Length: 578
Ligand SMILES: Nc1ncnc2c1ncn2[C@@H]1O[C@H](COP(=O)(O)OP(=O)(O)O)[C@@H](O)[C@H]1O
Ligand SMILES: [Mg+2]
Image 1 (cartoon, rainbow, N blue to C red):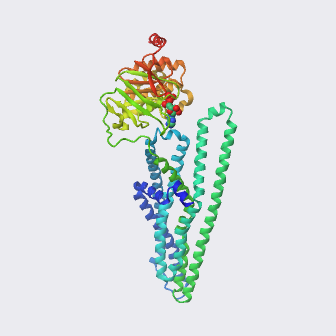
Image 2: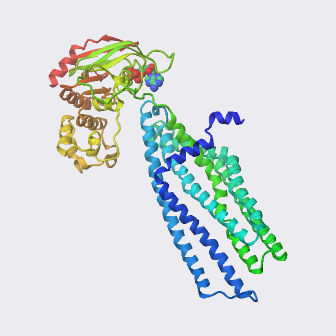
Image 3: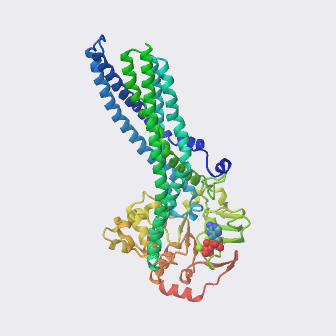
């Protein structure tokens, strides 16, 4: 059982160490929070203990009544408690906010290289749920574990020393309870609820992913009259989630009960032993009162440590899911001898490239060779699934390949950093993403410092400038505001403006008009004619009209390439419309 567990899940220690590495940037604030947290708890104990001492010195016959300084000390402890509680809260929130921001950025950074090859097969909702929800949960580990543990440790040791000053037996009574609450309960309880915590996180991730997926596909669901089925399934997933949650909460009840009971037991034991010490003349009356008061408040910080173990299993489960995701190897890593230098020329050569997605899988490309001279445009046609997109993916280094070579300007692309490849190429796919930002920002994504003139220039080239001017706020209109009002062709032309502004030497189109009607297709075709000059262009398409202006066309079939004669009709239409 243990063995099996080891295979599928990472060890706690490994997760904790990795999490610790991530907190480096907030370590100082965290120490600050721990210092004031300790001060807060110690002042709390001091108020109670000192208060009890003051009262006792009035009550006990023969005791020396406290002076003004002794009494004002109580107020000082009180003020100290208030101030340190405030600063602790402040510092804790600072830690939490900075950590959340830091965790988000660092996970995002780790995920980037996995795109586009690896994340394609993960449901996007699942990824969203992981990055969002899991990070919030992991924060529990940092905000509610590290400092409470440190505070509880310091406070507990102080209490032991303090009690020892009255009678050496007292620390021996308190210590076992401290060990139970601070070490045994957290460790064993985390183990006990671990499976449930993992199940809870998984179910939550699954439910959220399903919900996101359903929202994204709501149109399809409605059109196929599947609303009720989807609703039922969402309900079922919700019920399942609730049943796990219920179990988790009921266990939490048991934990709280046990911890509170143990603390009470510890208090009773301390009092009983202290009374025994008083009767045996080891402690005086005043000592008895002070010891009783201090031992009652001494366990407060241990309470938080004991109960946090219940949520810790969820934190670890979340951390494990995220780590597993970022541990996936990217499909392509830069070779050690790859350089960022850009090629000088931009002709493209595929030399005997063979490629299969899986080892021993069927070959998508078999001894594939192709030469595209710089500044020329070629078209690639072929049946769906014949491997056209694969050719583009290999060229853009989305996937790695073992047999054959691809050269750009006589340089092997494996010797060029991926970043540089992205600099010199741009892809317009069937549907590229428009961000929820203004049109201007969407166009300027590849060149954030572009001037308005440059943005307008590229929009004009993409035949979309006039349209943008008709929008309520022109270039400042936000995509979210427009919602579904943008047609596929308009979206596509905004994407093309983006690509043109970036002005790469190699332009790649993967069925850019396959979702468009003929009106929009003509607009795109015109755009293509204008922008293809002086660039190396590859167009993958089914549409004859897009073949009109390419220099050469090829057909891809069973991994091999053959010349494709462009029908005369296509050329004619082009010259008529030009
Ligand atoms: N990520 C992938 N993993 C495994 N097989 C894939 C992957 N992507 C595409 N394929 C397969 O490779 C073949 C070629 O796909 P693709 O290049 O997308 O074709 P096309 O663009 O010509 O329609 C298809 O059989 C497809 O199922
Ligand atoms: Mg394709």
